[in-house]
Each structure stands twice: as structure tokens, then as C-alpha cells.
Length: 290
Ligand code: FES
Ligand code: FES
Image 1 (spheres, rainbow, N blue to C red):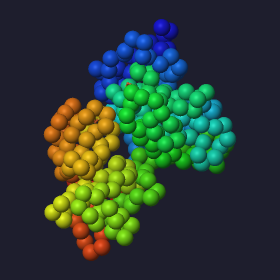
Image 2 (image 1 turned 180 degrees about the vertical axis):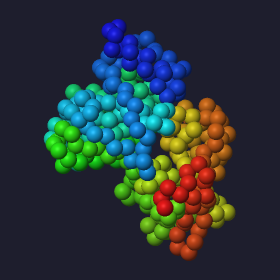
Image 3 (image 1 turned 45 degrees about the vertical axis):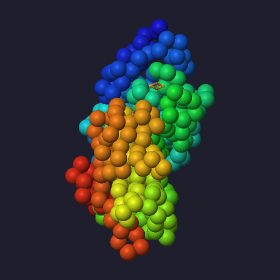
Image 4 (image 1 turned 120 degrees about the horizontal axis):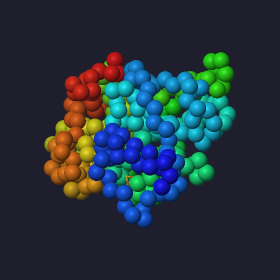
């Protein structure tokens, strides 16, 4: 084992503290992943991390990658990848830096344009985060990354990573609320129906469920074990994480581990022809959309 690979595996078992118990399985370790250098960066401001690309040599050439640890979010590193030489707004991608299988730091394989985990070989699509190869069962989170090459030169352009970016087809957080018109989200008009997506301004998967008694439940669908996205199992009437089997009730209460903590529950009410989720009601999130 060469020194760079040794250093990376050392990083893998210390970064964020979540990967400490990951077994490196004999014969299962990927041999293609190169270690992305890890760099501490400033804390995000209003959900935005701004990087001056020229300060990071790994990001000045296509195929280069860097793992960044934002201050205050050390357990949530991000993998930043330069996917092409040309300086355009989509020159870079930003993804969660941790594998959804067991939390190892991931790397970028430029020859395949894939994100890969060195621990047990899971691979992910760098554009969508979708799983390409197991054992990971849940996709890796993608963040908005917009490159502005106009200052000075293409080399020293600015990259803005938005930790609160959301799905274009899903309602964004506004004035502390996410509004779901029933005309657009008809699933919420029937008991047992549900919708899920990432709200811009919230930056987390939001799962809203129409309950049998006519009320609604809304939870942050991020599993509290290692951050996979939980699924609504309609026929069974509960929530389950596809990664390691944690289960939750529809109000987010954990009923089966390995997760130890319940999901964050938001207040959701029907008002006229819409279901309104009040994100400000949760003290851990606050009214960031205001
Ligand atoms: S931690 Fe097992 S494949 Fe990534
Ligand atoms: S991430 Fe492990 S059970 Fe959900």
C-alpha cells in the first residue's frame, strides 16, 4: 500500500467520526479511487459556500477533485469536482463527501466520470447522485454549484455551492413555509398519498404524507443513522430507510435501529386548496427562508 492510499484510508476512518467502525473488507476494496485532498473552508453564509478556485490547485484542471470541510459542518464534508476545462457555470459539481453505504469518504474517478467509494466499491453518478453499483442502496446528495468565471480570469473564478438548493419541480421554502397546492400535488388529496422532494431554501428531503384521519405529517426524510433518504411504505403505513433498515412511524418516531433518533417533524396543515408545511415551527431549522 502506497503512502497516499494509506493516508486516504486514515482519513476515511477519522473524517466526520461517522466512518470509524467501517470494516475494510478483504477483496472488496476499490483500487481505482485516488484520495481527494481534504481542505477546511469557511462556514457557509446563508447556506452558501464561496470558493476562489485558483486557491485550490486540485480544482484548476478537469478531473480534479477536492474534499472540503466547511467550518461548523465538519461531519458533513463535500466532494467538489471539476468536470471540464472550459469555464462555464456548470464547470463544477458538488456532492456529499460521504458514501451512503457506511459513511466512508468518496473520491472521483475521472476516466469513468463516476464517484466511487474506496471502502467497498460503491459507485455513484456524479450528475444525479444515483447509485450505479452497490453495496450502497441510496443515492448521494447533490448540491447546486455555479461557477462564475468573470472575475480576473477563468483560473481565479468563483464557485458558489448552495447547501440549501432544491429540486426545480418541488416547492421552495418561502417565508418559513412550503406550500403544496393540491391542484399540483394531487397525491395529498387522498389518505396514504405522499410527496417527497428537496425544497430550495431548506436543502433537505421533505416528505409530506396525507394521513387516514384527514390530517398531514411532514418530516425531514434524512435518516438519522447515516443520512440516507427514508421511504414511505404505503401498504405498511410507516417509513423505512433503504440503507440499513431503520424504521419510523409516520410522525418520524424511530421504532427500529440502527437509527437512534427520530426524524425532525414539521407542522403540516390543510388550508383551503393547499397543504402548508411550517418549517419555522422547528427550532433546529429556524426561518431560514425569511
Ligand atoms: S462505505 Fe461501503 S461502499 Fe462506501
Ligand atoms: S442511513 Fe443507516 S439506517 Fe438509515
